[in-house]
Length: 554
Image (cartoon, rainbow, N blue to C red; front, side, top):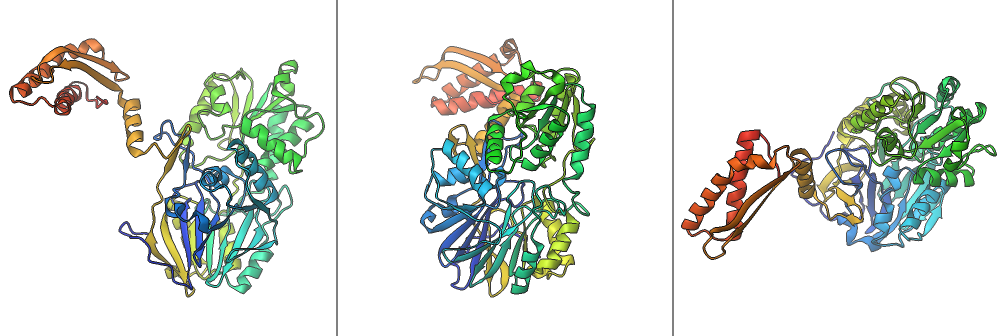
């Protein structure tokens, strides 16, 4: 198995008979999925998603792929193929289209409807091409065929990309539920046909590669939800992804069966469910869905609220309910259902929300204590089955953290893919398919680009480090007036602390040390302001460290 090396340099020019694959996100992480394909000087992008921030990224709203490597080649982009409508696959599209609004978007009906609604907020009217499974479309030098795959959102597609350099199949996110709620199976017949033609490189979803066996069918959840609904005496509050239409359908069906009304809470949830209903992906019995403002007129035993926040996102509706910062107040006897799995890295945030809800008396039902969610990604058994059908000549695991990528690579090796033809890459690592072999050829810039409010890319790692210090250790401010010619103190020093846990009065002990070091430096002829600031910072910093074992920002 080939794998990235930290000393990789820039890739050489691509040979005329080669296909270049450059992942800019989604490898070594869950989210931010984006892959750039290059042939004959032209580019095709598959997906452009976002990653949601973790605790050590305070103040950050979203994390984007790094567009640096393609920024001066925007005119070479033939289009962006979107495999499905989840945020980690479409959330970055508005930020790329801000740089060139006329890049065509190619995807299924629901996927395009979700991204078009999102782009309206950015005042961008995109060029779109709607495709369906079985559809074959020439996009510049790329001959793309779209294949139905089953996932936790309707209308998901894999894409087979044919070029003179060979055929690449990108699975997108998929699983092989044999009893899907929408009766839309992963099209194994189509994958077998592509296999007969010859799959030169397979990019395969790795998220559940460590999980043995097969993912249980979505239908199993309906009975569990009915049991929860049958036992609930007060309100039922369901937290789900705003795009998980299958799960919302099961909630609607259970609510209808038990005589409850449903209200959607949260802008993205209201928008997406409206789109899904209008396009026929969500079946809503008449009178079942009501506006959240009318719920006060209904008894608690007839109410279901569907909101966002299943991953513990601090600004989502469920987190705010847990913190008593939402118009909907959790009361004793409410039932809360977290209808999603835990995205790696979100565990602490989710359990914090569960604890908060439980504190106010809610009965919290989640994947840890009831079968209220099944994954949308193929487990190891399904991946083995899939590789035996596809028989790829080269394999490149995608969509997963390092442990997922390695586990997926091992599965490929077990099914007979030669180990020297399995490429484990990471974001920015360039893989070239030349003469039927996939090999790493270099690396391009692919760091995190942070969205903070309206600024994109302005906040970097140094700013985040400062924010973390401020959050963990606080800040100490020192004020004084110095004579610029002599360096003598004419006012101060005055010291104030915020968030450090140190009382302002405590600094009386260090004031003589600061005065002494400044007077000695003035005698030595040091009067430059920056040098004197550094002297104060070092003197005060050492005193705080020795006295309190803390390192606040000074």
